Amino acid sequence: MAIITCQSLFLKRGKTEVLKNFSLEIKQKTITAIVGANGSGKSTLISVLAGDLEPDSGAVKVLNRDPAQCSLSELCLLYT
Image (cartoon, rainbow, N blue to C red):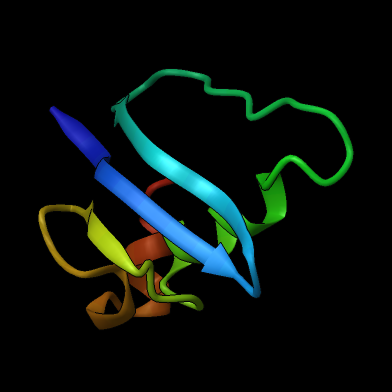
């Protein structure tokens, strides 16, 4: 079962496309690393996954819901 999914994320900050057609699926009981050079969009991606930033287009689902609608206790369960 996937606990986090992203489909075709696009996010622009100013004139820079930070996320371009980014898709991801993170399944239960797996370890996932987000790596890249400075300024490549890692922190921005985490902010989108957490529901702190809205992508310009695309969809993020955490436990099959919008991450902004998940409670902190539900999000903490992802890491136990």
